[in-house]
Length: 338
Length: 196
Image 1: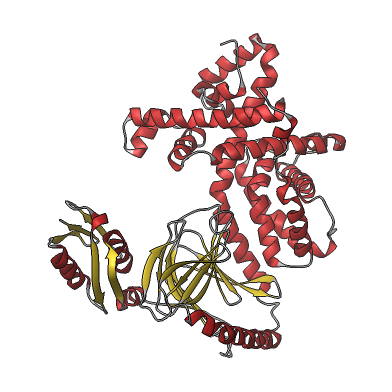
Image 2: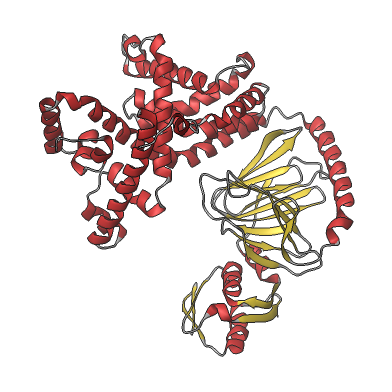
């Protein structure tokens, strides 16, 4: 092994052991090798540095999400006592008025586009609208899943998925966020930003009111005030936050029962010639189950049906009747359709 | 091979001016900008710190958090016009080594800090190296990354990885082999650009 390079060395298991001093035999081997080849020392030094840096970077990226949360929590603590209560309310009231004004101005323009699902507006921005439509479920480009409630709008930023995942919500939506630690998932409602790292949550943004219910994971809520973001809260699972500029109190977190979101998700499920893979995905999201379909080509089938507050067996019954299939529960969260 | 000067161009400074704006906003007291700064520099400063303390990751982690809090608290006294990355790296290094000296009751830490005139070059070398290692790791698939983590961080053998992932030795071998190949290619590519 006379010709060595940084690239070759990092592929050598024994060399990795030498770098971390984790195996005495390998350490001894490489020490004597270096002694015998003093000319190669710079290459060895560089390779050791590369291996160590790579491992530290792996540690750093592992630690980072928790470190960000710790920093947010610290910021939250320090910013709280500094808020001047009354000034804040007046500001909030002013912002609310502006939002209402803007909402009122935008309204007729938006409701003129009742057509469902994806619109490519002039600017390369993805636009989902359910104005005058029932609730719809779909995947975002990053494969996060959204249940967009009726009469709601979700606008994706044109650069969605490149550096970040930023979007604006008017109305209500439930998000099942695809994990991606490099691109935070950020939903803006009025002046508030809700940022998630691989979580499921429901958010409502209407008339200046913001409500967030966290199902799993963690989200943080920030408020934009004159271009500056102030931390409002960090939520843990089953916590909700209601921000109502008209209410006299500072927004407080509260706990909601697990059934709340499940009930909401089952409130309205509408399929109209919906391809079967989407039907399955929405049912999985709405009832927190996993469905396996065997013995048929999902892509070729569509399904039409309307469910309002129906229990899962009733929904599966109708679905299977239409498809001429049978379903069975293999356990409480797994269903097989065949 | 045809590595022209042009090949060296696209290194990083795309967001340098961006950094400056964020820094100014942070000095003006914006929490969002502060958070952004922490987000942007976390990994780089973490690795930079580990380099000076040769892998004392837990110590570096704690002091990186404290360092940013210290920055936030004295933001009013910071110069709004600085070379952000150089400022952050230098001041973190000093503070970190000072704290380490206190913790370990070292009498003389000046040898650890090293001469000032070499600092600029050191930071440039580090930033180049860091960028290329980051790019190399980013080029891995999640499964490849996982086996590399198991090998590098947990020092697991192929057999142990196979047992942990509940798959065959062959699969792990192939996965590791592809991951290492990928790393080598990425590192080699960048290496080539930076060194020649």
